[in-house]
Image 1 (cartoon, rainbow, N blue to C red):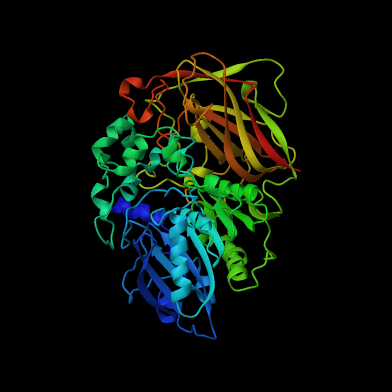
Image 2: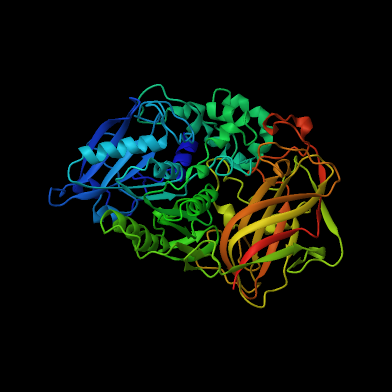
Length: 624
């Protein structure tokens, strides 16, 4: 039970969240609540709670703001109220009709739950339903049946509710005027459960939440009977003792999502039809503000790629992006001192976002004149090195130029190609994988968050991790935009993962900040993770059709890391680390090519010598 509660508390950032800052009685004192079933076009009824300001009247109409979620719209009952309504305390007090809905197959709604419901672009029958059609049918009912609404609807959601928001953009209901997908999932082969097809074993405990169908209306978590109760607090050891992923059936034999994951190891039609990005084909009508966190360990790919896809295919749409110094959804609540792991970014940054960005967006399009002159920039991006907001009229900015950082000899990271050919190697042993963190307790719940900015000295001092760094920087260098890794590798095996980490090395005289959560960590010579990503070499040419490596043959493995906006300050160094395991964040690659890594046996896991050639490089965008 406690692990499911941990999962929900980390992932579910909704109106019922317990971290509300305001007086918990405010919603009950200022809103009336109505619970209804709204019938979709195929006859399925979705359970919906509607909170209307008590002073709403014919001469005082309010816009509606809606969240659709698979994580429960509790508390249930028309006399039960959450501690907070809407995206923020500020917006709750400004006045909106707040609508919350359980999606199909979840909690009190009817129907069957489908992860990442496939989009049907050309609907021909009432049975052709998706999240866009459910959004359309819900909005259509709301504007026609809820008294004293002004005919304008906004939608927001974080994480999975962010996916429902992003999919809701495709509804094209004329009343949907503003949409803010926040930390949205865009594709489960690249977000959340996989990175470039590599399985995130850190999600292992979450499968009950997503893989058990309910049999009737539920107000509590019916899937708890599948919850794994580990007999240790050491997440690394639990995952290692589990052995190959083929052993997981003892926990999840009857879990439909686990079985779907195991039986679709490649980017086949199952995953492709669940992706959102290809559907934004000049169809976006509402104003869009995509929101993400630079340290979002769950959904960093989603917001960046949704923004870019809409931007590319919908040149006339109002489409903006916000990226702050936050972990997953952390912009939705104020912590006072804004921290991520050991890094302090300043005070009240979430409040700044809620007041000056989020509320401004929704107020303009739902209460104001709704034109494109919202007063907000195209891109509101936080520089995690300078520790301040920057604005851009395009992302990635045209002010950036490409720069190659070469993995040169003697551990040097250089801006010019090496003059002589060379290489360096390491032995990767999947039975002794590199841990992705020093905090061994964080992989017993949902995806751990802190590793995204954690100190990387523990990894870089192992023999199976390569380290390359620049000389001490004589001037600030701002990386702002995309990062591409171009590795030239060889291996004694026939498959391998390659993990690239971009790191900011602090100077020896860097003082600790006053809010350090771990008193045993010092910022003197701190190796702060800035960005990282994994790439299974099997997918180097195609995510649909994996290919074995030829042992001892030099091979290109190219892949994208997610964007950054980070200034490496004068006196710091830029570092790149390369390794083949980061466990149990990513499941271990057997290093012997198998058709389906989820079905690999213990005998398939082999040691391999990995060689990285010094004409490998990382290509970054540098803002002058």
